[in-house]
Image (cartoon, rainbow, N blue to C red; front, side, top):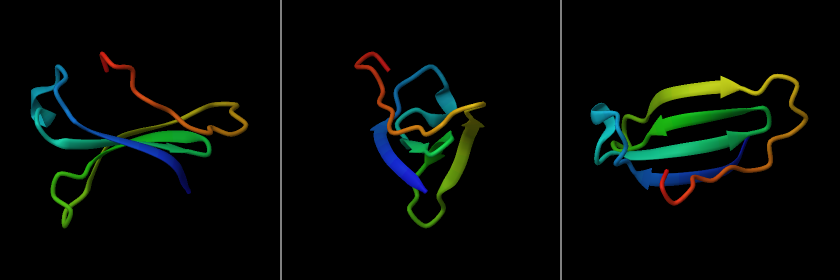
Length: 65
């Protein structure tokens, strides 16, 4: 279950993902980062589970990412 997603054209320090469409997906107890640049080949970049969380409602990047 994904509750909230923010997608951006990545311009951070990791050159592997520069100019790719990256989505940050907030789930009940975790966050997933997904490369959706190729809609036919979506790839998981990373994920993490929040220990001892009750429910993660949403997340959002700051303006400076």
